[in-house]
Image (cartoon, rainbow, N blue to C red):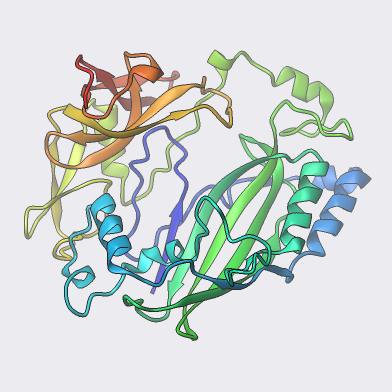
Length: 370
């Protein structure tokens, strides 16, 4: 079994997470700067040094901070709205997509040989990131991940893991800027048995319009072009949503100012974001209902950093619970970012962010919430 997910490109992540597999778009979208590398010895030298880290350890002897346990499974399922009976009661297993959760170090991290047996990020991986930082590629964004599941995880399982730097791409140019994709592969074990693999890809990049220490501009390769590519924030194009066969109907509805929710053709369960099949019964048949547009702020974050072109921090991103019972992520507008509150009533509207793109957002309609 395998699963992939991608960080959404649009402001409203209504992307489809396929039941078994979904291809992330960002990881392979950048154009290779082969010509630039061929004429710039600095880039070629950086790339050669980066390639030397392939195959080296990114983490060694990692141990999950907690055994697989029912409270974490329950919290995950509640957050995801996943009511699959396999994840509760006697004989319960953990949702396969929790694979990475059991390896994460939390706010305190795993440390570097901290004496608690948790392992940690290797010196080689820190050196690799330091090399990129030193060359001017100081920004980072996660682009996609891919998981393979080899065995179910059950409460009481002890998780161990190792990770390796699997690949470093050639220098690539994206709309965010120019940089290198770094992929790590984590091999996860449960009670010493192979349980799955987790591939994680980041882009370490130099934002478009910024110059590296060698004078090279991020995003285009020449200082003159970089200067010409510094439009006012209001003119910078918003990143485009990833539209695929699983969620195309949602985005078609947005163009007609309709917020469409999938409804299972077998059990009638509503679901969002759009998926190929029903989480409740597994049925692949579905139709849609149009959301009335009323909702409340279920949770939210205020984005301060990192800054991205076309976005003007600080701004509020809310998890909105619609009147129909499903939740979606979008911007909360019509109120200062520091006045957004959980429980605040909001109403759907469609905001045109540029000449080609409209996105669903939620405007505060009054009340301070809880």
